[in-house]
Image (spheres, rainbow, N blue to C red):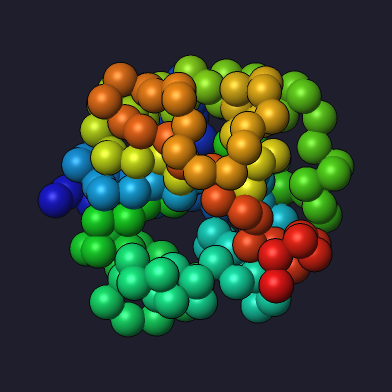
Amino acid sequence: MGEYVAHAKDMAGGDATPSDVPDVLAADLRIVFVGINPGRVSAAAQAHFANPRNDFWRLLHAAQLTSRPYEPAEQLSLLAEGIGVTNAAYRTTPGSGDLRRADFAGSAERLGRIARELRPGWLAFVGKEAYRGAFGVRPELGVQDRTLGDTKLFVLPSTSPANAAVP
């Protein structure tokens, strides 16, 4: 499996605003997790879900999706586990509530390109807002009716420390 680490313009088309946190992608992954956007802690670390209060990394192993617990700085090692990570919006903000509709421009097309060119089995959205930002509709949690080619879509609860709904 060839490693592919992209910045926004690689998968979003020429003029996208580069992300402070690069995509971690490769062909034929089992799952690509789609966060909403980088927060300040993640941007500073240049790693997805880097806020120490975010449960993403703990839950990844607890759900038996990885062979061992990982830290944000080890995000490239996820590729060997068949897992990738990207964001629906690339702009770093203090919180997802600071995003604007324009921050998601081209997101559905970019995710469609990832599905078509890299062929992951699943795109798993980490939070309803990541899915809504990309596709403009509020989803229910779980498997979605929409697919992107052969890639199935799934919506998980947000693992953000700001999401009080998930203990």
